[in-house]
Amino acid sequence: MSEHSLVRVERPDEGVMVLTWDRADKKNAISPELAEQTIAALHAARNDASVRVVVLEAEGDTFCAGADVGIFLALADGPKQNVMAVSELPEVIRTFPKPLFAAVTGKTVGMGVTMLPHFDVVYASDSASFLTPFVRLGLVQEFGSSTTLPRLIGRQRTAEMLFAAEPVDAKTAADWGLVARVFPTAEVQPRIRRLAQVVASQPPGAVQEAKALLRAGEEGDYASSHAAEGAALAKRYGSPENVAAVQAFLASRRR
Image (cartoon, rainbow, N blue to C red; front, top):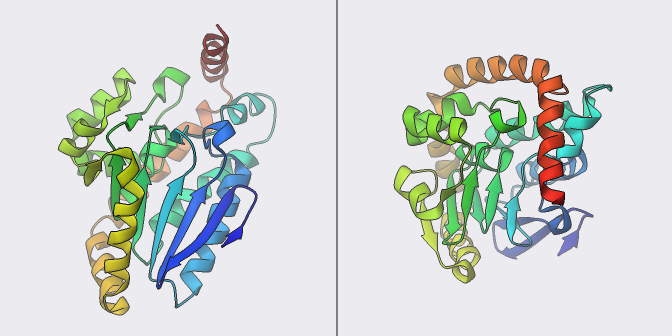
């Protein structure tokens, strides 16, 4: 096993690479550094013929707390390069040509939710929850989720998640189709790794072609919604409403 500062890389079985986000002290919030290291690992996996399947896992009781909220406050008066660095991650995930799985244990928030439709299979723990608090923070959704979430779970359920900004439990997420299966927490990672082993044993060319065909019809809709979201977020990141909402959120956590 090799280690990065924020992303661990393992090769537990033939053909399988496991990436583990190791920023548990920050609830695996997506910082530019975490995004960059994940992108580098995915590029390495893409170019390594011995890697047939990639699994994403996370340390701690939170799979992902979304974008690091410090980014939003920094943008109030500064440049937006950091957000652009973080925003590269979904495109790398979306265009990854090999099977890409995720094991969601515990809470996942914001970007941690909107990236999930870009994975081929997602398993979740029975303690998992899914929260999209964008409007509460004076923002809008991203990662092309204006298209991907309605396609996956339906427009009304997506609207409920986005507008109410309340967590969805694991059973509901599975019923809606946001995740494929739910298991007790201790079983999630072994189960997703077992699936990865099975898929890695299949003819890799056929598997990748099957994935490409599944994704082929999504490109046009994704591109237009992703562009519209980007334009909206460019206006809202660091806006007075965004800054006030984030400051209120941070103050509520200190109480």
